[in-house]
Amino acid sequence: MSDVTPRVPALPPRWMPIGDDPELCSAGQWWDAIRAVEAAGRRAIDLLREDGAAIGPVILDPGGPEPRLYFLVPPGTAAGWEEPGTVPLGQKCHVVVPPAGATEPPGLHWHVLPRGPRSLTQPGPLRKALGQARRERNGQAEAADS
Image 1: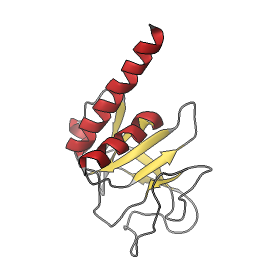
Image 2: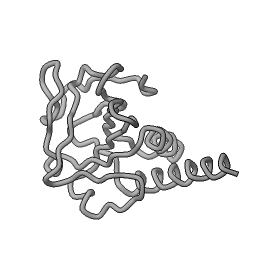
Image 3: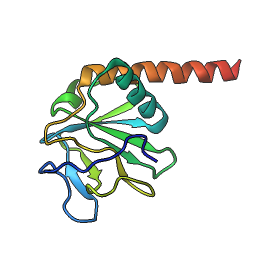
């Protein structure tokens, strides 16, 4: 369940699917996406909030062996992204985007809804938060192995 009270924006962004079905959208035009495992992504969101950083739209995909979060970031971010444990999705990549009404499980949904057409997570604070989340997660794994 999302830890953010979702609110559908008055005017959804032009790239937001219309209707009740998710759509495959091209990255690189309106936004790029940074994919992270759910645990690291949730921790990164907490860290961004602690720092007072703006959090743009975040998609939660619970399918597959490990659920994933997709942070929507400014176009072009993916080209220079090198944070370990994440996957940058830019030009020539696609992301399945849920419709505005999909704000709760089950299935693909918005963990953080867009607040406006240009509200995206900035790459610098996101990189810092995901890096810290990864280091914390690795530290916990190392402590468990000891």
